[in-house]
Amino acid sequence: MTVRVALADDHPMYRFGLRAALETSPEVEVVGEAGDGDELVALVGRHSPDVVLTDLSMPRMTGTAAALELAVRHPQVAVLVLTMHEDDASLFAALRAGVRGYLLKGADRTEIVRAVLSVAAGEAVYGPAVARRIVDFYTGAARDYRAQTFPELTGREREVLELLAAGLGNHEVARRLQLSEKTVRNHVSAVLTKLQVPDRAAAVARARDSGLGMPQAGRHLPGT
Image (cartoon, rainbow, N blue to C red):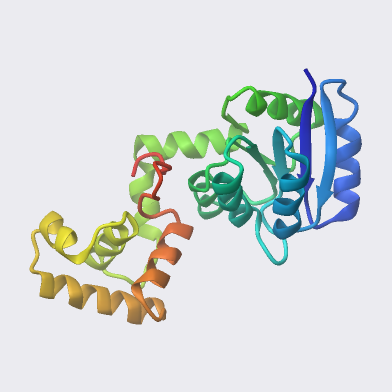
């Protein structure tokens, strides 16, 4: 069976080369291309591909935001990231958005085609460097990553922010950390000030984008 693929990247020449590489496989059919996340979501709505192969950094709507949108509108579509970004924040934000695979742009044609076919079959696919980061997360490097995230916050403020990002209210945070609700409110106020955000929703968004907390709808970071 042919796997139908939609491509998204804001560089037309890269899309051209990627399409040519994919179409050397008789098992892959490219049904359309998009230059940003908005175009990608519309493209998926028109063509119902099996797999989306997308970059992360794109104008108007990023690949991560598009993946979140597709998870709601078209949960049957497998999203595979192909990007130059190998930092933890980009990786874990994409995983939390529900992507099924994450490759770096150094991957060759064989690896990309294999990844497309694998995610279409329901598997999760990660390049070697990405897989090492995920293993590190499971084996304890997550603690180091959290400690380096938002260095302007104290350890307690970071704990409060992570629990807020996990969806807990002040009462639950207070119970979890064995603090008074007044103390939690003070910590939340300090977090908003230090992160220079207008409200707790904005703070939660920043925390989740940086890999802290546990997203809703059952999608969560490894180790959180």
